[in-house]
Length: 550
Ligand SMILES: [Zn+2]
Image (cartoon, rainbow, N blue to C red; front, side):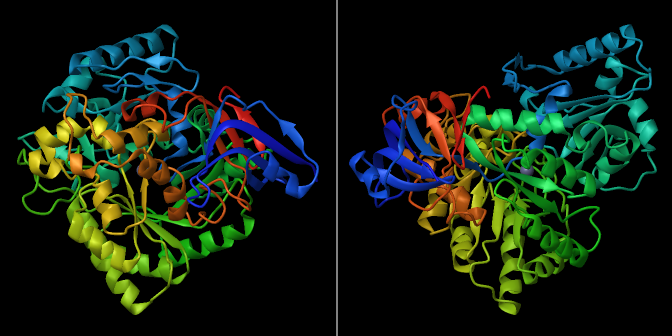
């Protein structure tokens, strides 16, 4: 087997024993040696590859909470407040008021009419969030202006809410008589078109036949996802909700089975809402683990307790939402969560639990604490995902239970001002995604994008955790800022720990997979405010080189 030695300007290894190097030897997809050129001689002949001679190598970035849908969203209209770049590099301009959203939808309807499309074909759009418009909520009165005949579905950026127009309510059979929690209403009891959480959204999803957002992943979407990963230096990523149906498995195995597929994927089994039977679920995941390859790893389970803070569907402890909104929704009742969690836990699987509000995080910690007393399991690596309002006492309990935290650092930028002004108020906004408190308590820490909720870009996520600034120029909780090295750890080894892969990936050292993020600048040589702007040249996955543009 030939050995290739890559020379680089600098190599930041994330291995504390040997933090910096200039050369790395790769054999059979793994790292053979790290150091200077002289050290490479120990393993005999090699080919010297100098294409990275002016680049900086880091361990390939690990995105511990994102969704493959990030690669498949762009066939649908984007309605977000922030400008956003698609996998082809085209920038979709943000929409800054409700009327601009209605206007874009009206144009799409007109275009569909001009193309002679079925007048009943729905418009399905994404990325919307009314919280940026200062408190006004969207209703059917807005959306019916875009079209009073064609069904319209708008998914919110957070994935937990949607708005529909009157034709879509009719198509879904949602009326004043519908008794589902999460169906928002006008004062006269008629549904206003805003739907919170899976139970309320389900009639719409069923009526549009799993189209759009909830359509199964396809081959083009898998390629789009890999393209985004290359652009951002990501070599390992999760798909943190996947039904793992036969069709899903075929798509995953087709993509990841190709030698030129540039990212390692860990799909997590959807073990909430509409998934029948934890026991069958656990057996399904365990059976799939026999099919694991380097690029496709089964074994993760995703559970969900509450909703989204900016959608006011997260469960909060006292004193609740600062704008007076009622407490949020249990997507899974805590007692049901505990029962199902125990089944997956006893099956030896690793459970990632969505908890946004602090009441939900506390409920998860309470339940997991009881399960671990009944069924102790060393090194279980269960993880709380998002955990946005976890405070120091809860982090200390998590440390005692061996729980990891994957915090949603991108929120500090995308919703930081709204959390201060409208959801949490100024006191609790300081501890939003309290990364430093997690580390101080000894909780293993990762940070994430939840793409497509926010864009996939680990250097940006690290920048959020380091700077904690908002679009209005505030710094939220200066004491919770990470150092650049702590943030880099969270997007490499920290995230690898949450996926039980820290023995294989996350640092550049002998024996690990040859996974690199190839950067144009060294993260410790630029100002912390510039971390997000470091250009990515490409990636290396298990020894195979990919440029950012493929
Ligand atoms: Zn997610």
